[in-house]
Length: 320
Image (cartoon, rainbow, N blue to C red; front, side, top):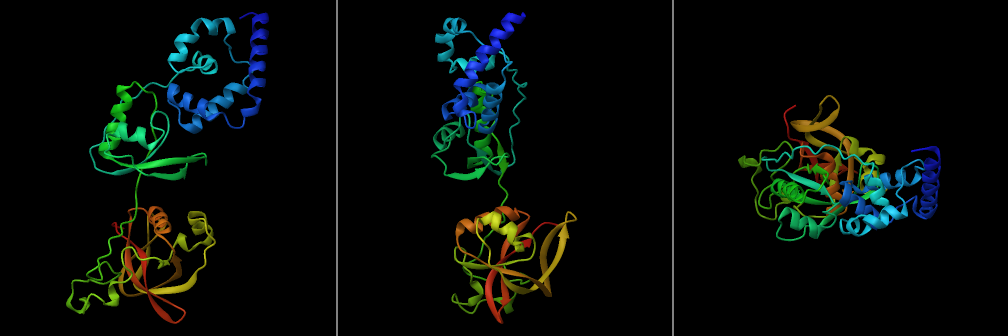
């Protein structure tokens, strides 16, 4: 490119940049979806690439005459002039082989690209119905949506993308959540109590040992680690936490991985911490996801304000 051609190219880029000034901060949703589909970007990647492309005045441009020559074919393929211009310099990463999984696990898949809504995900994953969406944020803090899928659905999604020669690679996050399986016929599971022993068997189905129930809310939780930090809990639940100084018996605090607190069974043990009233299933689900499957929800007696309250806590389940 000689000097005159380079100046003309920069002038065209400047004009295009002026045309897009109004959406530098946030490209139009149609442009975002187009770049996701054409180049395999996530939503945040598409936004970043569009903004970088528009702000680069030295980028090679496509003349109007050139665009008119290829327009009909390229628009059928999903391009507009801007995306076509970008495609002339874009070098896609090498497509890696898709590794299918055999171990059955649960994942959160981020919606985007050709699977940007529950219906398209249902078709790609071969599900019987569209899954519910969960709101969240991506790695850059932008709002996004997820759906819960299993290993078979994950493999089907990869097969669907490969069959359609899509460059898009969805983000899968292992869905690790603390188990909660409270019996409605016994006190199981309870901190430091073997509920199979005769002395712990129930006298009737109305026995107070079987409270709280599985889906009982609000419910008191005993916290002993980072969840007892109001900044952590407030960010997690979006509330201003109100705690009660509390303690429980039957436990021992230790650590795993050298830094994480772990509550384990210890008959006669005594642990101090904080009691917090969890108001809903949504709040509890957030807490269980935060603690991961390294822990499980168990019943316990929480002592605060001179009284004993039936409540729940997170017990460590793995080997230390």
